[in-house]
Image 1 (cartoon, one colour):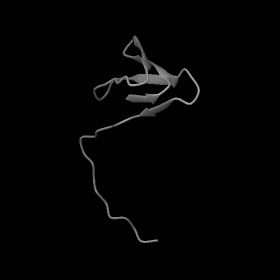
Image 2 (image 1 turned 180 degrees about the vertical axis):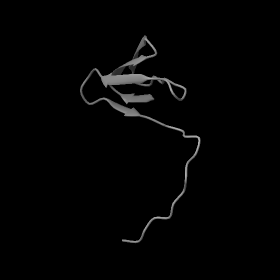
Image 3 (image 1 turned 120 degrees about the horizontal axis):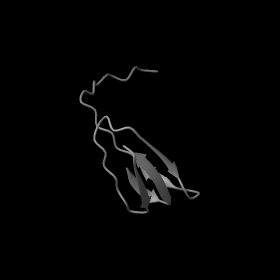
Length: 61
């Protein structure tokens, strides 16, 4: 999770984190967590990596 703007509070595995603009938090797979924005207009970027990603062709519309 990367905080592009604003601030968030994250709880993961019983520990609390406060992140502000420019901060990053990495969690390994399977870690139970929750987060919430603490200021208006917060924007975050979340990147998830899966063990298996299946590519499918886009159906024509």
